Image (tube, rainbow, N blue to C red; front, top):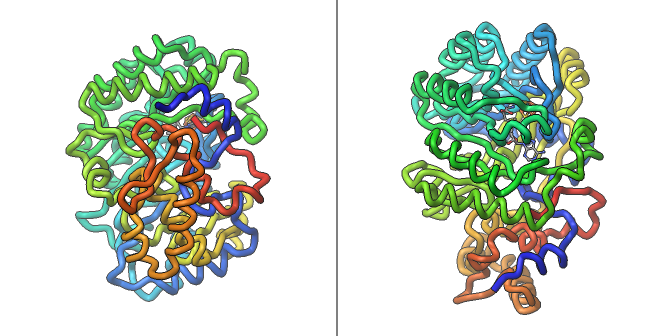
Length: 451
Ligand SMILES: C[S@@+](CC[C@H](N)C(=O)[O-])C[C@H]1O[C@@H](n2cnc3c(N)ncnc32)[C@H](O)[C@@H]1O
Ligand code: SF4
């Protein structure tokens, strides 16, 4: 039996969330541009690609927020930013002799929902010039319900939206006050109805545990309301308190934060509520109705994990556009300049905004594969590893044997040529993944709590 108290006290250090391997703190300045050239060189007309567009603006600032965003009361800087985005779309694709077909197109933030209908129209026009968008293209966007007006809905329809993700976090008024995010259930429910009426195929709701003043009773009430809205997917994140990176998190009273054990109990309770309501648990922090493609991919072992979390996206190329966006391809990861002003300046000078990156070694690729399978399937088979990597798989299989035989707390084990994380140890899979991380010991990066 796993003893969470023992595990949490034995491993108090933070661990990465493994949305990439190597993780972002290991990206190096100067590698972005050559890697972007390599990414573009490798594209072919028949290869579908995905695009992520970052909108780093919000018209409110939630104190818990860990995203790359900026609070703005004026709209003009957003229009300027959209202009830079359009220039970046043409700058990047001018290096190609064909229009790549988009598989997934995702707008993240910040709050892309605050774009005006005319900016959505401009963006959609530029995207349609540079890329093929067909009936299979999934177009998704992150929506702050407090932004949504009739105009937003018009803009989203112009965009051709097929999926939306809305932030809820917690419905309790005291918790909302402690995180500066007022948002009623009725308001959220109306936005859900309005988004559904646009014809989207799938809706995701983000909910949080580990927030200031959250208790089991409050988590229970919030999560019951979340399932009442019947989203196809739910993302349940543990609040990451990183005030040394996000200064506004200093507004949160640390004395109000739940303990590690409370966080663990809150996550378990929320998962029970979702599962009792018919949702399938996916990876470490997602839930989906069994008919949803994410749940189907999890059952089939074809789930993937990228910077946006768990995904059905199987393209090996993700192009990141906008300030701080991260892209990836078989050869590595690429991150654009983070400060919005500097990103816009580079684009205005006609330069690629790709700044940082990491070129993957064979060791990175194999470890990255192992870590992704652990995060998605909670295990990997040695046969599959040999099929994919041939003789190169041997040292990693050996490492898996030594990790499993040294394990004292039941976090991982071996069975029939398979390394796996037992069901009751799944909340701690990041700790197991970290054992395959060759960079962790050299890292001076600080991550968030393991739960
Ligand atoms: C870009 S926001 C979602 C869209 C929109 N801006 C909103 O807040 O409704 C992405 C999500 O990241 C999660 N998030 C933000 N800050 C976080 C933090 N410090 N720890 C854990 N999750 C966080 C929240 O659940 C949030 O909904
Ligand atoms: S949680 Fe969403 S709305 Fe709030 S500041 Fe972060 S990105 Fe903006």
